[in-house]
Image (cartoon, rainbow, N blue to C red; front, top):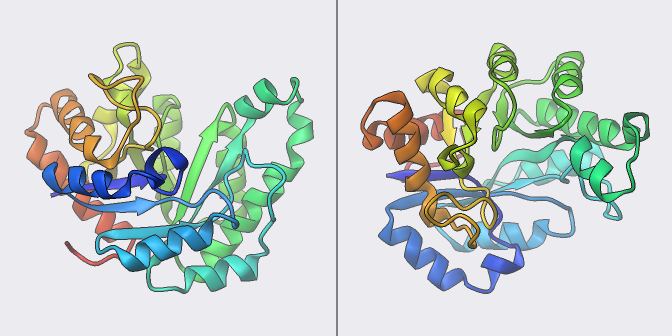
Length: 263
């Protein structure tokens, strides 16, 4: 019934608890999840999980904030994306906030390596014919500019935390918008508005687990089993039953990630 469109199942908080995580997903009627890649070093573990578990799919890519990891060439990403269980390239994008906070206040001019990595992923996704999973934080205008310059195809802005204007720009580019557990936070006014303005046929939901657990679990380890709480809050904001959000977001997931099978 529910689909978690973005989670990190090989991160230590969840990898060591996989049987319990899977059992909780079944109990919560979460039938599918997309396990997101953040480095090429991580990719073999993700692929093995996706091959072993029905309902689990994988992406391939390098998170924009990751330094000191292997940089994939376009052809390597394309080859990985050809695997039947790999349905997208990413997560990729730009994260100026994290770099400025963690790396001693670098200027935006110092982020050329992020922008070049992003362009590599966009080109690979376009050539491979698979969607692009975009992460953007404190970098929305550069993210949108580069997507336009590279002629990006379809994809999703995951864990959306930008303004409604940025959401509209992403939609104008043909992208989907994914809402995370942040929508359950009382002070997330922009996310609340975005959750109501995204057309039903472009809406995805996610946990981004093990982070950003929705209320009433805020501050705890997040899991895909909590994605129904995201659906419930989005439904409340939109004035529709939770089942409608569950069904629409699952249908959208299948449409965008066309290699995925129905549950």
